[in-house]
Length: 104
Image 1: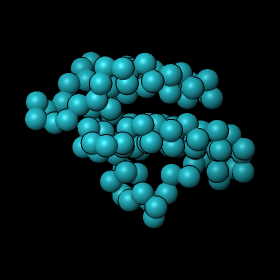
Image 2 (image 1 turned 90 degrees about the vertical axis):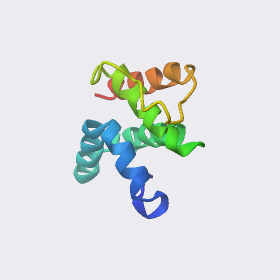
Image 3 (image 1 turned 135 degrees about the vertical axis):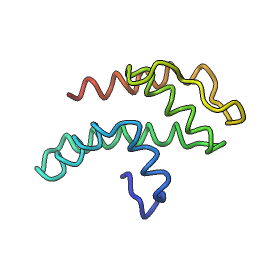
């Protein structure tokens, strides 16, 4: 599970800014005892695993790519001195977007 105690507040806050709507759906499913909680949580956990791998500061580029794929921002560039992720991550992130969209 995505747990601040285990992963820290930076991980949780960074990940939740990428998909605040899905964190809300996950939490609502938890409160309702809806088993969809586990499906949503698993996809969000996968997103976190992918984006917060080494080098961890590159999660900002992962977040920008994810938000662009969702149509929430127009550009996924980050600060020029910030570490970046490979272009191949876009296909994986697009699949995560697809998985989340299929859960709605």
